[in-house]
Image 1: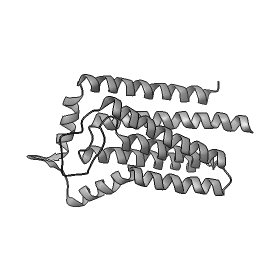
Image 2: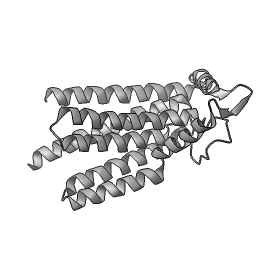
Image 3: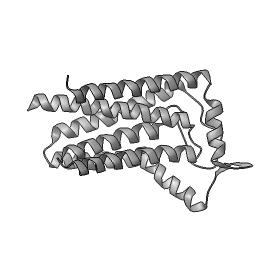
Image 4: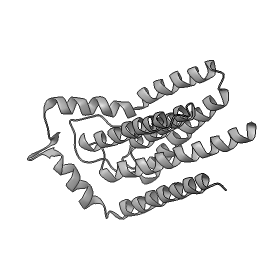
Length: 216
């Protein structure tokens, strides 16, 4: 096992352990104090339905949160998969699709299993599923981090690789933060989603590199 693979497994293990700890604390109700204090710090005093900040910030948050929506991520996935197929990178297209679909299934299954109610705040964004873990945070991490990895593999320039990983990480972070700001998720929902989504994206990347190396 190479140093890179060993380091990757270490990060993967840490992310999964972090998710397990968060899940255990959420089930026991030990995170509610922290969750509610963060949510209320982001609401107008006396008006919990309204996030703090000017109207343009509210609108910007809704725009940003859409970057983690099922519709936007599906359109992005289809566009990238078609490009990969046209570029005759069928193996990469299949792996990307499997990674995103798998991550979505895992996120949905865990939502059903934990069945955590959403924060008792209304008037912001319509929601239809349970709260833990955040689907937006989970799947956006899967999609953007996986795309960042694919783009990074297309270049040998270290600066470009750092740029691709940085943009992917920033988009993932912004989507998660927007969910808390809008009051549709608890902070621990998003932290769990980030942990789970990053772990899944990392696992997919490691598997792809292993299969790709054997195919050469």
